[in-house]
Amino acid sequence: MNFADITLFMMNMVSKTMQREINDFIENVKKKKMSYSKSAMSKARAKISPELFKELNYGLIQDIYEDKEEIKLYRGFRIFGVDGSRLELPNMTIPKDKKQSDDIKEIYGQVSDHNGKYAVMPRVSIMYDLENNIVVDGILSSLHTSERFMAIEHLEQLIKLNKETKEEYKDLGIYDRGYPSTGFIAYHYKNSIDFLMRVNKKSFGAVQEFIRSKNSDKIIEIEVTRSILSNMSKETHHPKIKQLKSELKAGDKIRVRAIKVTLENGNIEVLLTSLLSQDIYKTEIFKEFYFKRWGVEISYDILKNIFDIENFTGLTQIAINQDFFAIILTNNICSLVMSDVMEEKVSLYNNTKKRKYLYQLNRNFSIGCMKDKLISMFMKNARIEKIYQLIEDEIISNLVPIKPNRSFPRKKRSSTKFPIAKKDGF
Image (cartoon, rainbow, N blue to C red):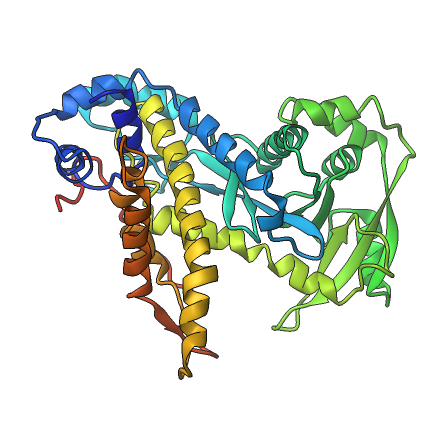
């Protein structure tokens, strides 16, 4: 198989045994009679940099945002949810892989349980476009990398993207309470990126004072202290935060807007935002604004439980990174297809006749039916329209009803992951 074949193979939601996947790819995609071993695949893929998939995803995102008429905005903003998580790598204590096991532990970090057993668990972070359902940027890093550090890496990528995109947008980042800091807020102001952050009630003196007050929406001032400036010099902080130290001085005050939001259970949360105009941005919009962030959780659910992003196909750092970035790219392409079908075909389906329920995509099935077909569209002489129609027809024939007022307690997933030697054979 050539370079293009190997690239498409890695984008094809590989989850079964490697040899089974190779055989299916040759039969279903290439449609040729040939043999290709998993050892040949291993040698071939070792020559492909994971950066290929990052750059392909970057180009895809750039193309998407250059068509402003097709981009969904929320109250005039592109809204991005940023959040981190952890992935579990395959158990690497197999004797023959001992050297490799030690290397991976050193690269990504590990956690131990009470029995002394370890798991290699890199930290992952994504920046997710909450209205357009695409992962704009993904990072796989050491367990010891802070989520705030990775968030700034995402924002730097967004700044680069904005410079290279013909269209101009207003951007707003939405963050959970692990992100707010004086430096992080100052970084947003410096780069003209608006933000909305849930804040820990004990994080800033001005926030604590606001909580004690009867105000529900107020402009407050966060004071830059000597200890804050000293903290910004720490080695763990992003270089862009360290640069801000020279632009701030003790006694400076940063104005933010603090808003109290009452949750369904009666608890009160505090949000901080750079949207200071209380006339333009009314208090009542911020609860819905913040809960848009739930889209990031849904994205992680898709990546982990549908794409099986932890079901890595190799034990080397290059294989792990290839899998990670290839899945993000494939996820985005699938999301674009599903969005297209949802807006056109599903809307038409729901409006053609009176139905007891409205219908929506079966996300798990929709993604599954794109295996083989999606990458076939990138093959030479592919009949793209016919393949796309096959995907559409299969998705539409398996819609599911939206039943109102249904809720279920969140279930914890089994601790059983994906042992490298026990992948599904079919």
